[in-house]
Length: 112
Image (cartoon, rainbow, N blue to C red; front, side):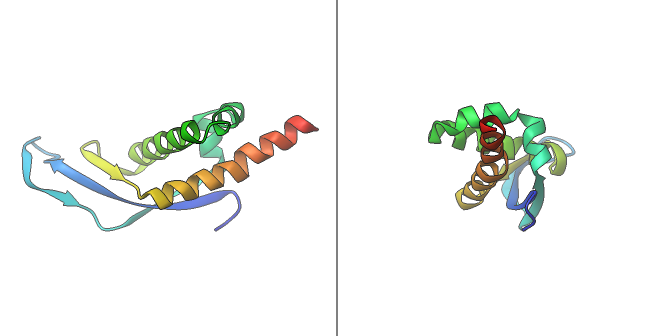
């Protein structure tokens, strides 16, 4: 893993046909996929100060990480009819990445 980015593993699930919108007889789950999140993606989605503020509450940070990760993958790498499924361990890795590369660096800048 490079310092300024992290690769997140996920799958997509589809319950409706992308063409006609009819409910599929069985939910289709994709093979494992990967998406690269860069430090810039994190700070483009929310300012460093917002991430720092959320980091004061573990539940708030976890929710913000989940929302960010789902939104960025949905926007850049999924069809509108797909639901993104990310394992908790992957979300924890993203949270650690954000804590290290965004929150900690913000704290360093503020303390100078």
